[in-house]
Image (cartoon, rainbow, N blue to C red; front, side, top):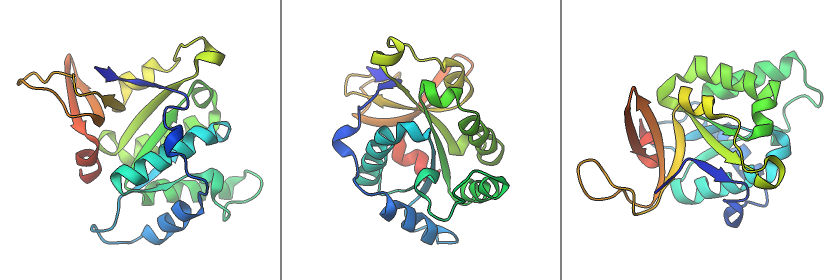
Amino acid sequence: MITEVFNRHAFDSYRVTTLMEAYSSTLAQEGASQEEPVSIFLSHRHADLDDTKGIIGYLTKNYNVLVYIDSQDPTLPSSTCVETAKRIKRRISSCKKFIFLATNGAIESKWCNWELGYGDAYKFDKDIAILAMKDSSIYGGDFNGKEYMEMYPSVVFSDENTPKKSGGCFSKGLYVKTTNGTDVFLTAFDKWLEG
């Protein structure tokens, strides 16, 4: 079975307590060689920081990646301005991958959609993915961003019972799902990071 929309707090057991290590590491990553861990720009709504911390913990523990989030970047101006946008554009450009944490609130955020638009223009389909998350207590369990998942590759979770067309089953873990017409492809998350 494949989980395409995660429940809020699904990554809570991996939540990091401090985000400065990830921030410092992604700064050092600029201009680094290919042998270094992959850097990911994680676009998120600041109100979703608890879930963001869980996702960062999960990704860094399981995939040895560096994750940048702008909400914890002390070099950004204290008030949003043109300089903020310029710095975020540079950060999106310097990170190898872009993941949009698509909560219903993030989908409604002009700022998150601006980041997604820039990520779309700069990263194209092979380096961008949507991680969809719903909150049943606030939104009745509905996820309002299905069109995002139709436009972009999405991060999904496969249990060990997801059958392959060629026989057998997928291993348990994260995958990036892409579609081409009616064909659906699952790429292991670590392979997506390498691509």
